[in-house]
Length: 175
Ligand code: IMP
Ligand code: MG
Image (cartoon, rainbow, N blue to C red; front, side):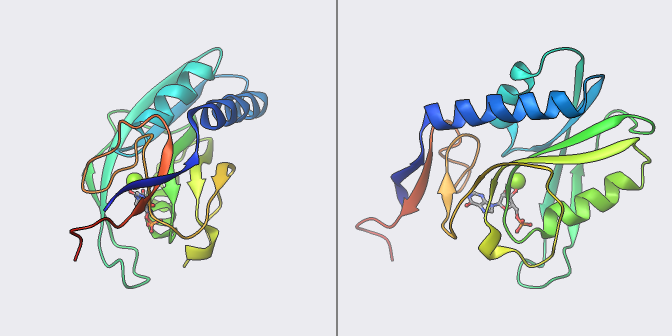
């Protein structure tokens, strides 16, 4: 497998991230606490944060998902946040919502920590793949049911560094 067709160019992504930052700031003019989910969201977080004027703080967490084939949505916290969320305006920053299982569980975990508001921004969404309904307040792009890489998203931990988003395609030598 290797990156093939470019679905979203660097210019398209940068323009949309600026628009999202504007919308988010319009809705949350004061302190905003960004919670990024490692590793996939690191590029999106970096561009989004730099397009948000005013006061921003950020924190990181890492999760791993189990039971992909089921609707159990078992999510293990590999790295927890450093700071408490109570009373804060919290924005979850995610790379992509696929089945929705990871995000749904994450929202549940974070909501239990009593943030003043809890919203979610995702760069990409694959609506055709959704298995559980999950609220996403800011969506960058809806994409078809295809595996994509770049702009933080990986295939076997590679291709996160691409400045654009491409669909993976099989190549000679694949089984
Ligand atoms: P969900 O729980 O099925 O929504 O899974 C979401 C996670 O699966 C994302 O945070 C990504 O880490 C991974 N993922 C889903 N689709 C893709 C893709 O097309 N490319 C890279 N990672 C993906
Ligand atoms: Mg992820």
